[in-house]
Length: 151
Ligand code: FES
Image (cartoon, rainbow, N blue to C red; front, side, top):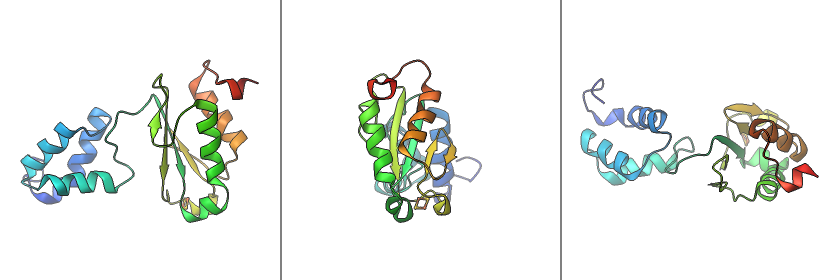
């Protein structure tokens, strides 16, 4: 924020930097940024909740984002979400009880030609199937196997 002279146009950069530092954007951080940039809290909150990149909740050790944009939806991404929800007992938009996996959804991650797409810890998995995605997530999580995947 200092680098940008505490001007309002530093908002995205400030949110990005704060999330990189803390892992997510809590209310205290949003209010601090709003105060420093002399912006209404509603604007800061609005930007932080508009972009899928920003999160207001702590994330798990691993993050899987399933694209539910039109191309991916048509190609079967809802089945990807259902498979993960079922296997790991987690609802889209939340984190498993052991904080191992956050399951998020997005409205297009910019790789429509690879639909359906999931992004696992920043790695794009194109033309994903439930079986492939469950296997890749399982590899990331290591030993802790959900009952549906283990059998
Ligand atoms: S709709 Fe999924 S990547 Fe564009």
